[in-house]
Structure formats: C-alpha cells, structure tokens
Amino acid sequence: MTTIHVQPVIMAGGSGTRLWPLSRAQHPKQFLVLSGNRSLFQQATQRLSALVAADIVVAAPCIVGNEEHRFLVLDQLRELKLPPATALLEPMGRNTAPAMTLAALHALESGSDPVLVVSPADQTVTDDAAFTLALQRAVRVAAGGAIVVLGIAPDRPETGFGYIRAEAGPADAPDSVPLVQRFVEKPDLTTAQRYLGEGHYYWNSGMFVVRASVWLAAIERFRTDIAAASRLAWAARTVDASFIRPGAAEFAAIPSESVDYAVMEPVTAAPGEFGFDLRMVPLAAGWSDLGAWDAVWQVSPKDAAGNASVGDVLVNDSRDTLVHATSRLVGVVGLANVVVVETPDAVLVIDRARSQDVKSIVGQLTASGRSEQTLHRQVHRPWGWYDSIDSGSRFQVKRIMVKPGASLSLQKHHHRAEHWIVVSGTAEVTNGDQVILLTENQSTYIPLGTVHRLKNPGKVPLEIIEVQSGSYLGEDDIVRFEDTYGRVK
Image 1: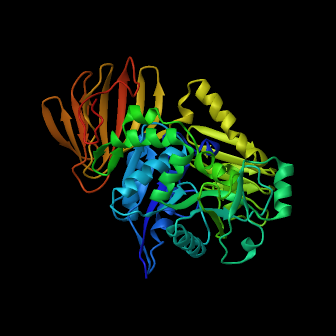
Image 2 (image 1 turned 90 degrees about the horizontal axis):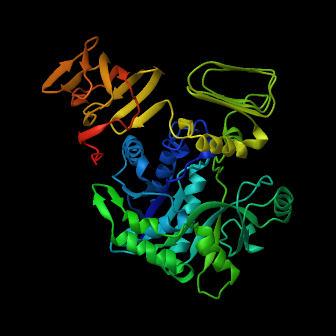
Image 3 (image 1 turned 45 degrees about the vertical axis):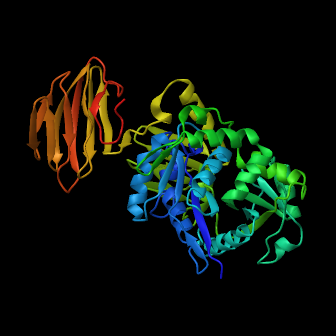
C-alpha cells in the first residue's frame, strides 16, 4: 500500500463583509462561531486534520491568512490543541491563485510532493463523516496526478455561487469522479433555475485537491506572470517562529487572480489539450459557505414558524426570521423573512432575500471613514482584548483583559494620561522607574509621557478599568520601546 502525504491548506484571508455587523475587517467571519461551538476556521482545521487513514498521512496545516489576523489564528489553533501549524502571512490580498502557489512552494520544502487539500476557512458542513470520505476519495484521485474539485449538488437555484458542469452520466454513480467540462460564473436566477432542472451542474465549493507539483505546473502553464512573481516573493520570505512572510514588495507585484480564472477555466476551455486531468468529487455533507445572513438562517435550528435566534431574543408573531443578539435583549413582533443582527455598536435590519446587499452598507462605512466596518467595540489583541465602554470630549473609558502571562508593550503616549483600576487578578505595572504589583480594587496613575507597561504575572485573567484623559485619544498615539509580539517599528 502506497502512503499518500497530505498538506492541508486553509485559506483564511477573507473579509466576510456580507456578515456585517458581526464580521469586521479585523475580526472576519472565519473567526466567528456561527454554528456549533467552534469558529468556522477551527471547524475547517479539524475537518482536514481528520483525513488520516491507513494510506493517508496528514501534516500540520498551512494557514494562508492576513498579517493582521496572525494572533487570532494562533489563539484559535491553541484552543484545538493540534500540532503547531505554519501561518503564511500575506501583507495584502492577492486572491486565491497566488495564495495556493505560495502554499505549494512551502509544501515542496518538506522534501516530498504532498497532495494539497485546499479549503476556505469560512465554510461549514453538518455531516463530518461524509465530508471525510469524499475528501479521502479526492486525495486518492489527486495522488495519481489529477486536479480535483469538490462539487455540491444544488438544492435551489442559487445565484450567489459559481457552478461546475460535470460530465453527464458517471456523476450519477455514488463513487464516480466525473470529468469537469466547464466552470460557470454566478448566474442570474433564470439561468440558475435552468441549471437546477438540467442536472449535472454543481455548486463550486472552492475546495481543491492537487499535488503541489501539478499545481505549480498548471499555474506556470496558464499564468506565467503569477508563477514567476510568486517565486520571487517566496525567495524573499522571512521566517519568524511559525510565521512565514513572503517578501512584501515582491508580493505586492503578484497579479491578483482566483484559482478558477487562473487555471480551472483555461483547462476546461480546451479539454485534453494541455494534459491536465480535471475531475470532480460530489460532496453531500450538508455544506454551506455561510456567505450571507440568509445562509446562516438556512443552517440554524428553527422553531415551528421557521424563526432562528441567537442570544437574548424574544420573537412573537413572526416567521422565517433570523435574530442574532450579542449584548442586549432584542424583541421582534410581526416580522417575516427578515434578519436582525445586534452588536454593541451597530444594528442591522434587512430583508432576508437581500442578504447579499449588506456589502453596500459596508461600502458606505468605508467611504465615510467610519470604524464600524473594521473594528468591534471589543477589540482583540495578542495579549487579550479591550472594550471601549464610553468616550467623550477629552476622555475614554476602557475595560481591558490581559491573558495569564501576557503583557502589553513597553510604551508611552504623547497626548494622554491614564488611570488604571484593577477589577480582578494581579497586575504588574511598570510606571516610569517603578515596578509595582496591584490587586483587586487597587489603582495607579500614568502621567502623560511616562514610559509604562501592564503585565499579568498570575494564572488567571487580569481585568482592569482604564480611564484615559487628554487632547487626543487615538490608538495611534503609542510609542513602543519593547514588545513581545514584534510590533516595535
């Protein structure tokens, strides 16, 4: 029996704008818990780790993600207690084809030619066993040199997905791996209804299975510019523990393109001409990409009237409605086919059928320079988080949590002073030349311009209330001298 080596690759760089206000640029949907008790990213990691079989060896995952999300990735992997992963950090978005190319170059560093199992980080399935069996079948086919895509049999005329046209006939057999005849862009409703009626059309899941060498051969055949630029960025990489950073200038020069446009569509445009065998494994595992609030409603538990709710919610005389409350009681009466999402700093109310249009609100927020599309009121940091409780002219109040053993940077501020009150835990405070310990109900004052640091030396989370006062209270008024997390410029 031949052993197949698998390199899981999890694409975690999306922004998830259509799930605003829960999904924000600095805490996007893949890191949210939208189904079950794990984030979508954690679910994807666990699913790919479960591909192990008698003939399949699975390596620690390679996470391709945004530099800004690196500590979210590490924290969520740590919760899973899985072997250490590699995080390939993109300085900016360049779509999936360059990301997959860099992952293939990384995989070949192992000295073998593993099968890449490439999955977006923001999907969910309800049947893990069926998922594992389908992916294992795809791995075995790809080990023979084929490029394999996972296709989802459609149950409705969906206009938000791309489609795959599979070879007629064999796709009906339960163990078939039909040839892919073409990739189709997101259709209009009439076309989607025709696809549903004709059969042999599948939703494109965005999951690809292919040997690293085969992918590199394909990208070099169809997009020499992406291949060459990606190799330059890889050659200029730096390595910091589990973080791999491609050369920033070289990465910025890579053309932005999706896997579908770069390779899959050219392969199907001239079948057999280029020598690449493109096949599809049907996936029937309760798949959803949770791309918009309507998709979240579809996979959520519902009452007899079709209402789904999360949090402190009261629903009366309503049907087919999703209500998601984060920080307070939300009551709805007399609604039908509506989505209501509440967060501490924003509320969304939208017709469920128009869930895709949330991105227009995000566009307005971006154009007006508002922070609600980027940050939640509670902002995660590698050392913990802070929650901006209140603010006004010349003052701001924050609740701060520091993880056990963690510390903020050694820093100072030009425009603000700070008062710290310990709510729970123990604080080690550097305040100028002094280092003191504070416990519950004790406090200290940090004058403007004083070098200071907050550290949690204990084994339980440290919580403090911070009151800032001064002429400018922006987060960019920080001069760092030392930092555990490499943020000193």
